[in-house]
Length: 425
Ligand SMILES: [Mg+2]
Image 1 (cartoon, rainbow, N blue to C red):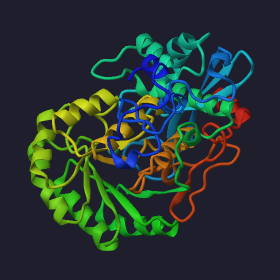
Image 2 (image 1 turned 135 degrees about the vertical axis):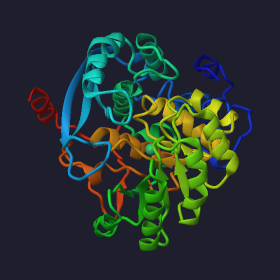
Image 3 (image 1 turned 30 degrees about the horizontal axis):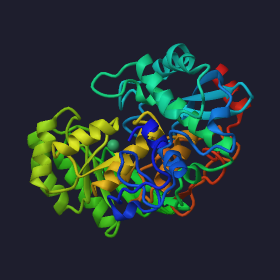
């Protein structure tokens, strides 16, 4: 259902729920909205948030500011070869002075976006394209962003775009005086248990690394696997031996070829692994199909699912059992919510992970996972690998979990002076 159709819908939508667990909110592709008023339905779409300032009265966007920064890296992680994690703060200010903060988290070892490319795309293309637009029309903003920097196979430069998407969501919540789950008509979880990442070069490193996680209250572990199946099996067995009851999640980051993946998947299951994420490259569709058909482990996709259309197509082609959601990868929360709704509707696994997210990007992930009742420990490893914060009240891991922000918008307060200083530095 498109926005205009939703606007014209009857006061109460007659459609049936597609899935019991969806009760209480409307999903986007016309799944169902029984018991919802037209206003609630449109608001839940995220198209026209239920603003305290009515959407039509929201002052247009006046300025988009972009601040590249780096966070210190505190431990070995293969995606962070330098001792710093790049990130780009985005501040969107409207004509009436209202503003929202977002954050892009490019990681060139993971995908093609860099600190420099995200910064220049935001400063020279994406930001200017939104000047004069309504901050309340997030769907319209994405239409403009996707015309300004077009896609290739899927959404182009999604990580850069996520910074603007997050800032618009923050603004929408602040204008309404509501947290994002409230804006979406959802009752969020209070806390999200985290999964500790085990990425080692030698088996002997596992025990002390897991002990460090346990000291911080972590009870669940994820391992990085591929391309060496012999080493991966040894890692899986050791982690399972040390944590017999944990949710053990193996992520290949596309690093196996098809034959190796098909050989190792049943062995990883025997070793006690619960799910296998992105075992082969995202464009190795025949490999994914073979692994799904083999059925040794649930196949979870990450890198390859950027937009909800990718998810629908890959599902129709029987390539997956679920998705590791991360708003940074999906150009922000707007598309991420549609993907979670699709996963729920089709009874696929909804896992939550991230891109070693700091601060604002971490807040957005927690809000998405909290609002949609994440059932698995989240592989949000920013707190494990990064130091420092640009928030006035930084996130603190307690008992291996993070609290879901409750304030208006993204529920975090950015220390603007600190961001400006670091960005100049
Ligand atoms: Mg992954």
